[in-house]
Image 1 (tube, rainbow, N blue to C red):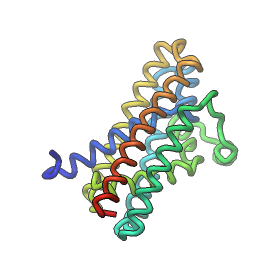
Image 2: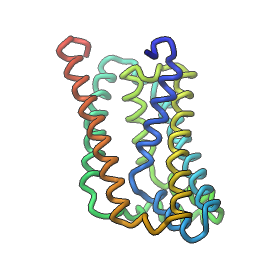
Image 3: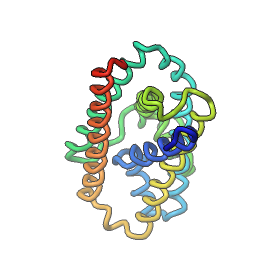
Image 4: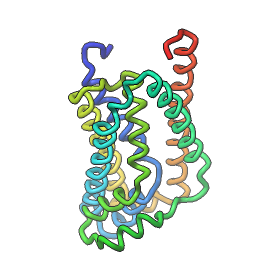
Length: 222
């Protein structure tokens, strides 16, 4: 279907992943919820834009700085397996969550040093203080390229990165609007439900990926 439109496939891959990976409740979502309820939509959306900017920086580093290693057959096979394990781990982690995660020490330390005052910089620093986001995008970039969802060329990579920005922006914009209008419905119980659904989605992706790995092994393509 997308054989003649690889950039469209790359953009759709980025959009879906950017949306799905923005849903789990973390420091950015919690900041948007708290600040949106207290200071309104514009403040919340600026936090979101700051977070998306830093997220895209990490995503760009992952695709441009590490993607060249994925061409080797052995490395490609190893990244296929690690992608399956990582997706399964994240899915189970989100599905088994029993409480909303707190801010990590590294994030708190960076925020104290930089003292972000604007809404945009608050969102930017919240993501910058979480290097796990970079690791996540390195694994996802390996997964996308190894599965030929994103071709290892500049145009396809940046189409995917653009899609990530659109997907993440859609989620954060919707969250900012919802919390500024009806913040009472976003209870901890409801937030955990959202995270659990996200976990189920990641587990399903891991299962699909695992089936593909088995299929490749049986057909001697790995």
